[in-house]
Image 1 (cartoon, helix red, strand yellow):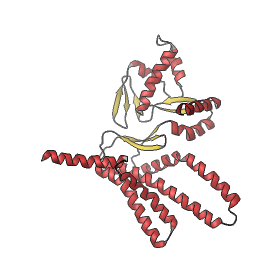
Image 2 (cartoon, one colour):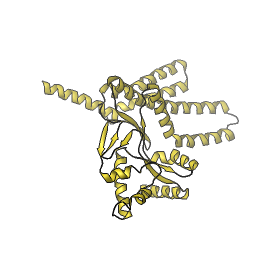
Image 3 (cartoon, helix red, strand yellow):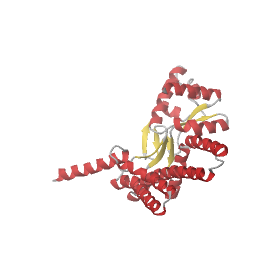
Image 4 (cartoon, helix red, strand yellow):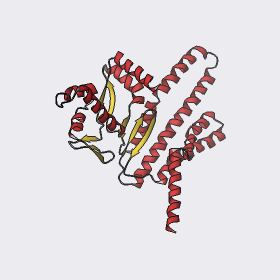
Length: 298
């Protein structure tokens, strides 16, 4: 199935005359011997061949372009060179040190990258120094990731309301409002969850290296030099959940379904405290490690 999807996408790109190109992310620098990830404060060693390849990743060259430019420099066939380039580029993509996108017709490339491309290719975002800017960035990334969902929902709703809602406008529009309130609460709850992880870690540590990674349908925080504390892990899902319970309590007093759904959308984050989730597992590991350390000291 995966190969079939890739085949269809490649055919679509060929039909639209789009090309996949590679580039170095903003916080990554290339030296003759090293590629340095400033966001994580770490580096990867490079040989001379890898440096020459990476220096051509300028957002305009495809793998074929790079091989054509280097084939005369090295005494190997273009096919062998392309294989080596793919190995190096794919390895660095796994480490989030190289990114890719589609170029060609500006409008077509923009639409492809916004729809299909963002689910195929990883993209990293620098964490702003401002806490408000960090929240807005997370909100933008999540809303962008849900673009396909917005299209799939809004078009049928517009069609239905314009053709079949002659006698029940107020009830239908209220139901639609409730639905979007619920979706909005889920989005804000998730953003608040991830934002809390970042802010608590920043408060507990003077300097935190990391970035926000958008990959397929997920958004996550990648950090290296700072181990997440139990407080940071716990408050991520707990803050939006508490806010959700407040909204639910208010809804029961004023008897309002929309406020109730707003609360449910936030409370959903409490699932992340369960042991089978990433946060829940992290909390459990911290508690068990703490008990083990106490037992070892005794």
